[in-house]
Length: 390
Image (cartoon, rainbow, N blue to C red; front, side, top):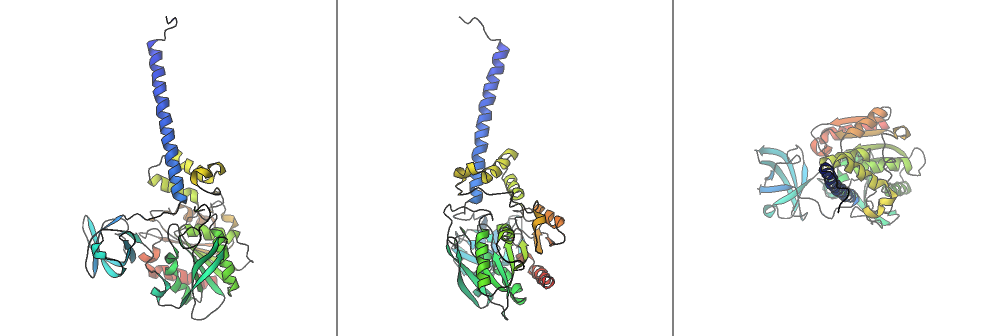
């Protein structure tokens, strides 16, 4: 016999609380799982790239694609197709309707475009220094994990000024080729490098990105290589995560004062906290999950979940907070329509250090595709900045 029967109302409250507790636990577990998966994706080099553009038709002079934010952006671009077994170069838009956009076809480097149905957009455009018609050499930069391949492109007149180009996340050194002509015209030798886990350079033991917190060491190795081969004044240029990497290299590389004379940053990650929050929101992660992602990446105890050898010091990668520590001039170019890394932190850095930062705002151009959208403006900005640097 139940001597102390519970009131019906109380039983209902208990039942509701139990159900709510189960639901909350399920929600918490689901959020934690999503946070772990997102954090792992951030630092894990992708094995293949998403083919998010449908190829609808092609002729010898045009290609018709599905409408996407990238395919609708004016300029010259690469189109990788058929799981990256083919590559074409496309030019300006010649027509579009509610479902498609037709662009000039500038050439097919390899692959069967007529048979292709899907592809992906890229800002690389050039595939090797040979596409630029310039004299170059394949070299190896000694790094912590072994020789890392790089290209050296010499100027018409040799001298002590070098540019070291650092590509972004999930791409390779081909991304940096767009910078060679303007630097070469200014008398710079261009050293276009690979770094750990990018698919060209040797991998680190954990095979994880450090978001610039480890990759800077390979940039430091490139600086040593350049100095050993005659460099006396070096400009570091980085795209996206490469921007975060060269910022770290400028602040942490043990080089003599005056060797690194400036930085050029294109669509850079100036603060990973801002970039991660933006990306998390784009994937509809709730605020708690976005906070959890940052904790997972930066806490030693979470390394086994993410597969990292070391936690990432996100505070050290926040160059807005650390703006006072910067010591060399910076040309900072970012599009307000980036679509991947918001211009928020770039703009904040420019406001924090107007004495060092030359801020150049683009519109329409998307992430790491400022040259593709407006090469004349892009080149003239760098050329003018280099004149002022001297």
